[in-house]
Image 1: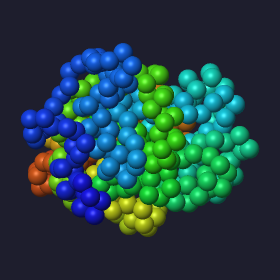
Image 2: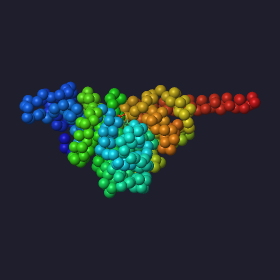
Image 3: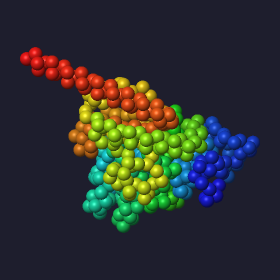
Image 4: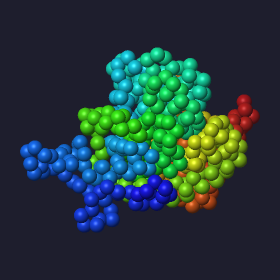
Length: 401
Ligand SMILES: *Cc1c(COP(=O)(O)O)cnc(C)c1O
């Protein structure tokens, strides 16, 4: 597939190097753990499926191609991809990391890598000065999520990558929220792009998968070694599901993004909503930076209600969105970061990062926009009714005293 094709064309015709003996249009699932070797001296292209499998390779080549990298790697989950990539750093190294990073990533660094002598500092990477000031002589890695989760904070990727290069350290970017359809971190100077393919890439809430992509072949060799060593590879059936999901990434994201924009504007007009966080709204700090490095605002937004009680009433009244962890699927998914994605973060840390008990995150799916907005409107009406009733009871009580 030549590089001048549009992204959506590349999504469809992506099994470039698979030899299709029978002309299969869909990538064959090579259900085999090992491969027969016809000679004791000359082994074939594959020897054992942890080290390499044609179906997995199809996915790995596809994501490398889509991200503009040279090499891709498929893992059994986003966390497997992230954890494996973290082992590019060593004892005594220091890592600078976005402070509102995904909860699982927070856990790996604070509870596992810390035991192996890896030092870390959380900084607000949306402030380049904090990144610069956080650099130590032993800093080997800057880890960024942009937009961040769940507050959609924007980090200037080129700016961060430049700081990293000046100090001889690597930059990792978790690109789960935007996918290469909307943002290509390798083109902006990042060294490793990470994905929870569970989300938009696969897109149907039916598989847990992770991907990593690099541009530098030498770094690719190191990551290949780690992938084979740790062995957290993605099974072939799941590789196939991700490949299948990828084909519709363009149309799914396009539709979900359009709807997310409408919903963000609707939420912004509701008095009960304290804040709306969405890069498509120009009141989001950093939205100019965002559109300098990304082609769209994505399909995830967050908004803030008063407190946990309001969240509870509101969520109960909604009919359409699935109330669950995860994001990036055909169905809209509403989640409650305080008790879901960021439950592993201590409450003080969580609140310091603005992830309060009133915050909700919405990943917009493919439902009809009027149905979704109607559903939200109904839930707000219910919320108002409940608040009014509570006020009336309180007034009654006061009157009775
Ligand atoms: C879900 C998610 C992960 C973790 O991926 P899994 O596939 O659940 O292991 C990492 N980063 C972000 C931004 C995510 O949303």
